[in-house]
Amino acid sequence: MKKKYFLVILFLLLAIFLTGCSGGGIVTPANDEAAIKNVIYDWSLALNDMNWSKAKGYCINGSDMYYAVEQIEDLVNTLYALCNQVTMNVVVNIQDVSINGSYSDVYCSILYYTTYCSYYETDEVNGYLHLQKIGNSWKMY
Image (cartoon, rainbow, N blue to C red):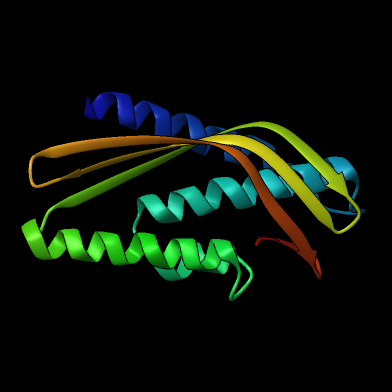
């Protein structure tokens, strides 16, 4: 089972690396799309690492996504209090990226795998993530 997670994470890292090799220069819609995908993949990796401040850094402060990360953090902290061993894996499958100026809608599925106290839970969410370009950075809201 750990090998499967390792392969999924390795694949995501490879995808992030390959989409990150856009070369810089003039920002085009293709570069925006790659940047948007990188934000979402990096956000999921920060959740996997339980690096809450980094995960919130990919969100607009005070937005729904920002508070969603805080809720996940609170849940994990509660689970830690129960059994002191929690693992979380978040896998994102991006299916469509739509960019309209400084706003983007990304249709994707997000799989959450959580283990704690010898229990295993999984959940899948399908829907849109919304991003806004602030300066040169895309952030989820």
